[in-house]
Image 1 (cartoon, rainbow, N blue to C red):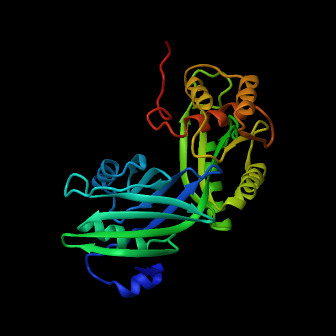
Image 2: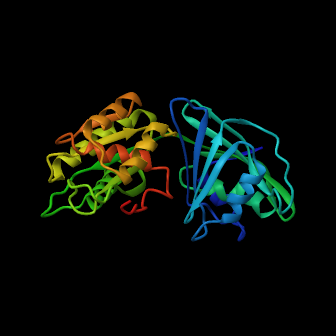
Length: 315
């Protein structure tokens, strides 16, 4: 076995067929029974082939998706034997574990997929070190453990920052996410605009709420939330701004149902407060309470890409 840091790997292996991944992140939560593995693939729009092969090969992978060059794998912790079959099951994850403040994921692949397992991932930003068991390439198997920091995923729903005469929640939220990444080093992963009930008489105009997603070290969640609240207090134009915070991998079913209902019908503050309390969703009233209705809906819609931008017509 050969253990190398990304810098050591870049210096030692300069083969023209090794193309480095851009970045690798591993997110988990307090239960530590699953991992959200995010990999930014070296090719411009990623590789559906890789997503398909990993899902076919490894029983540890609950699901996987591609969004541009961002590959996301939802992985159960554990260790399994995987059978590599050219074309049919060419690459996968055979082990995923959390040890202290580190996450260890063992990849295995045939031929080019083996090069990706051992060398391409090892050069990525976010990797602490890689343990290379087999290098891969040609017709050979490549196998390596990629070790990364354990990070906590934080979803923050935001609503009601503008007024009829000026402002825009989606742009303010994005600017805050960018500022926090630049100033604090917290990784700003996603910005999702969630369409809510179009006929809400209380809307500013388009009736949308925003979900921001960050990856931070476990002990930094409170500081992240404080930063978001502080910036909203500084820049919001509304006296109803509120946020909802969720730092676990799975969004509660009741919150997801609430998010869907908020797209189709009026929702009121008492219900939002009750659902947030019953599901242990953290709530911060920045300048008022009204924004909780949309902020909670954004949490519920976060992991439903087929729904969050959909517009429901009047029935």
